[in-house]
Length: 222
Image 1 (cartoon, one colour):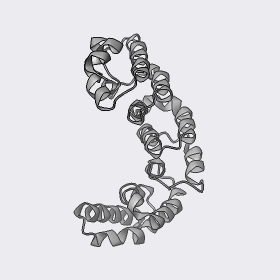
Image 2: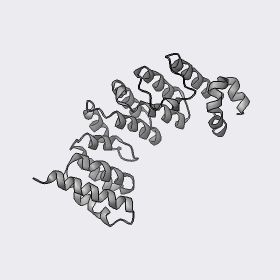
Image 3: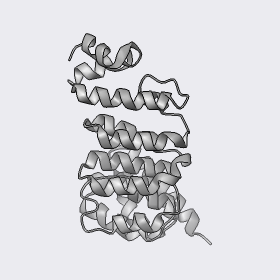
């Protein structure tokens, strides 16, 4: 892939924004054609963007089907994750079922993390039962994602037992959720699990542990 060929496929407006990554990733021409089509349809809605990342701070529910389509049709995991990651604002709550469906259909831990990051950003309580169904599956936790953190953020006490189990099985992947989001549940049962991090060699982990315990103790006091 060359700069000239990217410009030939995408035109100068999109090509100037995309040619570096297209060359670095040796992006197939078919992928660039799909991206060009999606960007054309986005700009037909009144936007003026040369790449998907430019939509990072845009709240427009009309973008949802186009970004979901980009996720479905693109092949690069980085581009797919980038497209789905643009759907993390509250205005996109109506498409949560679509995000959950794609979460269940993909085996990629990288894409699952990207999808759940959007679910975390939206932060809707309406689908708590669905989130619980997913984290209660036997294979949940084999790789890290944001579903359990979301349940903690929403103060769902049922998440505590799952968090404790996963942290004990794999502290490397789940210590961040335990320390940063576990305290949001207000459940003091987490304190003994958190306490060893007060002795961590990592300053950030010690600080998080101290704040987490203080928060839980304060919530548990009469």
